[in-house]
Image 1 (cartoon, helix red, strand yellow):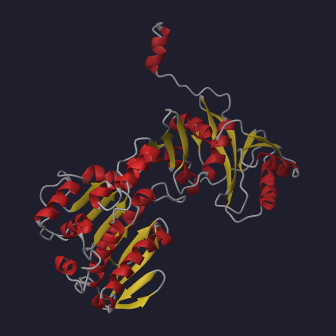
Image 2: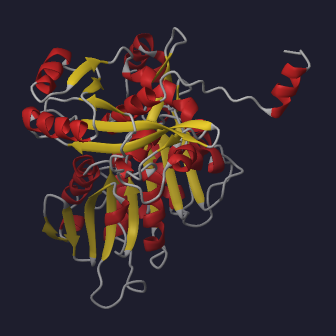
Image 3: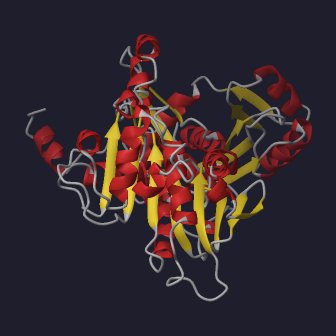
Length: 476
């Protein structure tokens, strides 16, 4: 790779200059090539390892502040792997290998593809390898295609992959999966085995969870797997041309955010609200909706929306049931209508469902309070505005979830949204619960509201045997 990076006719023009040396050091180390003394200094600083890999690594994960040049650097690596490496011993006759560029959306994955295209276009020799070009892919005469894919594990199984590039992996979110990053990496890794392909991930640290955090915790530093290279550092450790005063201003405005975005620190003010294991324990497998049962008192909660933005309009129905010695909130119905939609049409549909369960009133969140009440009143349903904000509804659901006092429907959207909730601690010390940036919580909000209504007035504290004995002895 050094020969390609040093040759102006190949990749020399895209990785030239002192500001690119930290990234050059990582690219060379990932291929098991020798480093110069200055490159070795950068390598040690960013990986906390004394000795560079003696052979090509299986994986490289770069966790760096924003504007570090990580995407453009990895694009140069993609050019090298797709245009200057031979995979004839790993591909069958007529089989094409694939370099996957994966991101939260195809639009975001296009960022790396644009950089890759720029690398090929900047080199007269490499540009001649391009035999086809579309909005989402490059085809090369080497038998390799470079394609953009969205972060969806269902569409990543099957192809023979020579390299996989996962961009901004710390911010992957999905309403269809509780852990999209982990599932996607699990889907991609087997496709790299026969080609001995490399998995490369990039990201700016965020919450202490998910694939990137786990791989950093396990493999960063000298104790990590020598075949898995993890680099971690603030923006200016990768790219000293980013103005220090701009970064300082960001810290003054929001220190917690800046420490993650520019300092590459994992955020201590953001935590997972509820674990996937806790949610899974409350899900009744195969139960997608429950019919009305005579004599049962149902409650309804609506998360309204206007139909033209990014939010869904959702409805949830629940009831309280005595199971053994405990009161349990049972989720009966979850309905979601995604935009675009007509609010009047959805209101009529939801009102019919509510009346079908023998109730004539519902609670709604605070969005469009007057309009929502008037719209449902036309269809015989009286709607009252929730006295509690969304964050409180989620917080109040945590104890029932942890104690198993909730039965959830087998809805992937609901499960993913509950698992995607984040607990944030403000400077004042007060906690709030909300969806992550780029995520949604419409289904989870209506479910939390309905389950909370069903359990209203129920005492949720359970006493252990030791606490009961202490009470009997008058110790507490």
